[in-house]
Amino acid sequence: MGNISTTSDDILACARALIVAGGYNGFSYADIANVVGIRKASIHHHFPSKVDLVRTLIARYREEAKAGMARLELQVSDPVEQLRSYVGYWEACIADASAPFCVCALLASQLPVLPEGVVVEVRAHFRSLSEWLTSVLERGAQHGQLQLTNSPHAEAEAFMATVHGAMLSARAYGDPKIFAVVTGQLMEGLISRSLRDDSHGKDDRRRDQDETTSN
Amino acid sequence: MGNISTTSDDILACARALIVAGGYNGFSYADIANVVGIRKASIHHHFPSKVDLVRTLIARYREEAKAGMARLELQVSDPVEQLRSYVGYWEACIADASAPFCVCALLASQLPVLPEGVVVEVRAHFRSLSEWLTSVLERGAQHGQLQLTNSPHAEAEAFMATVHGAMLSARAYGDPKIFAVVTGQLMEGLISRSLRDDSHGKDDRRRDQDETTSN
DNA sequence: GACAGGCTGCCTACTAGAAGGTAGGTATGG
DNA sequence: CCATACCTACCTTCTAGTAGGCAGCCTGTC
Image (cartoon, rainbow over all chains, first blue to last red):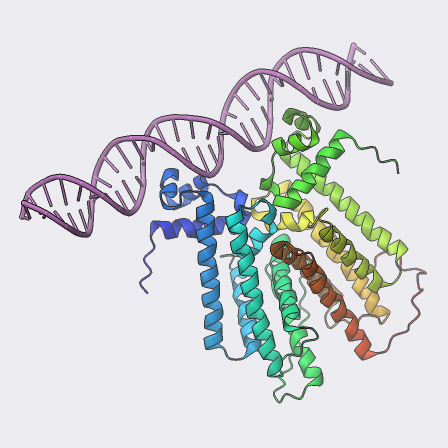
């Protein structure tokens, strides 16, 4: 895959960063023009309207997300490690501030003022992420690595919500560590349940978590 | 409390609703003017700048939140019931769509593009909510009703994050029920742990000296 | 090989409307 | 008299979006 960056790629990347920072109404074509080094009108050549731009942006984001999940399915067999990788991915993004928020999670927060076309895409992302998490949790339960107290789907929703909330807290406090604190407990909670009452051979019980960030 | 609604109250209430819907850049003075039935310039009379408006708005929101926590401390002695009330409050707000999101949580998502004065207030809300939750969880643990696997503060952060994430999911799916699904599990998880472990004294009327927060 | 035509990518110049904000006026009421 | 609360009228800057031009490149035709 020869990844030559075209202007339209640059525009999309820039817009994504701006949305991650401030949402749909938090950026303008002028902002993008400044960063990309192009004129405002030229952006309209690539994306006639702002809705077009954002919709393509999310479509691409969703493709990347799906590719990421598919890669995890291929490269990591252990469901627990899959969850850990997913969380670890975001932990890294937040730590290096490269993309410290999920585009769709951020847009979801302002859903009521979003154009129709965008709403659909955002909602679709939530659904597909939830579905993937459901399947991972389900497999983890079948393998006896996770014991779920509720349906896999319900647990997946809770997992997703906690991760999104952790992103929010990290941003609110301005401290990336809080994301790890919250998601660490989330993982721990899912795993330790299985260690309590199931007879799965490998118990690598590690409990080194009390590193709460104090302000 | 004789609540006569002044114009400036109306402006604040309206602005709050608009922020809850679309964030800081999702509303304008013109929007407020339309709803309140006043001219744009008249809003400037009450709140010289948008930052002034939003800052007062959050300050008031924070007061209400603190009052709510204080009321819970007085009226509900059981820490578990306190948490249930807190979650129930939001569940009701989301169900009747009256204010289906925490103002500060929403603003936190766009923190990078917020004016300095607003950032401070938002961050302060997260801290005081976290502190209150910490004290509730701590008391719940002392009373043997909750057994925490991590520090009260860490558990409080996780609790808060999950609630915020649940708000987000409810909005993304356009379905209030998802909030109850997620937070129900959250509560269940905290309580069922104590039921497994036993060691609880079941008398719940104990309000001699620890009315004030003890962190 | 030359050249016409069309497409792509970008430009300047412009629009209408919305943004936050100001100046200065008027009615009301203690 | 003066403060409060509201108004009209206006300003500047920013907003997404449009019109139309121009250079370069690919392609088909002679």
